[in-house]
Length: 324
Image (cartoon, rainbow, N blue to C red; front, side):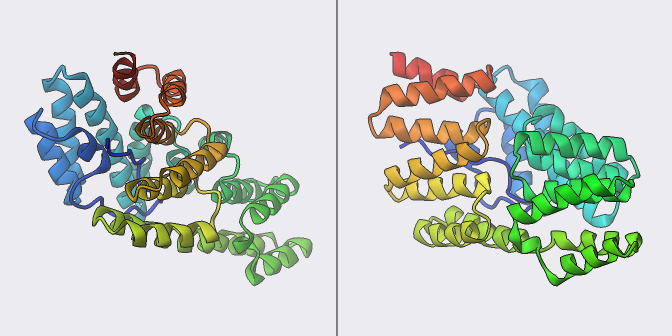
């Protein structure tokens, strides 16, 4: 069975991918030394070294598949370096890394969100607003992006509009509806806007972080081959945050690895309902359909991948194999 594909890591505080990445596992190593060394550095958390090696691989090889993978990991390395810079409070460095990652992955809502976070810290409110809007265009149910969009509007004096977005964020993620939220509303009603803003800012670290904790446990278990335990962790995460397409994708992968293909297909389809442009999920759905002998349905999914990413070599090669 062809291994399934994982998207970029799930959160803005990513854990390292251990042992062997999913995409590397799919394609194997040995085709380019710089790429192989880049994977090793990436898996060890040495992202600056990994970035240099992946960029070198791009200049050394004409192998289209290695070029595709190297570009993917160039973006991943920039994302990891951006997150590390955010944690240190180096917002200019973080913003530059997220900008580079977005050149390769313009459809990743989480990257737009993280770039917006850095831009807001740099007081570039127009830039932050643009990238929050992009994150929400890609995934309208991205509760944390909706929350931060409301906070940005509130901070820049558009309080009436801000309150609509904050209320929508609470509807998307009831975990935001805390005593602090109610206290912030009281401050707002009574004209204490600075106090209200400070409390709104504290709402982001709630159920989302709990869901991502379980999702990361699931990823660790998946990489160790304990698929049943991984499924349990992904389900715990989705019980908290049912609208995370990444987690549904990973749940589908774990179910497929257990031979529970029909359940996997259902999870991939749910992920696509959340984000129809999620290429990795369409690839996973196509692979699973093909492995079940549903080749025409698989072909339809590969074609949809090419509508989103016309140069996607995995889909192109799969279609050629189906036609053979």
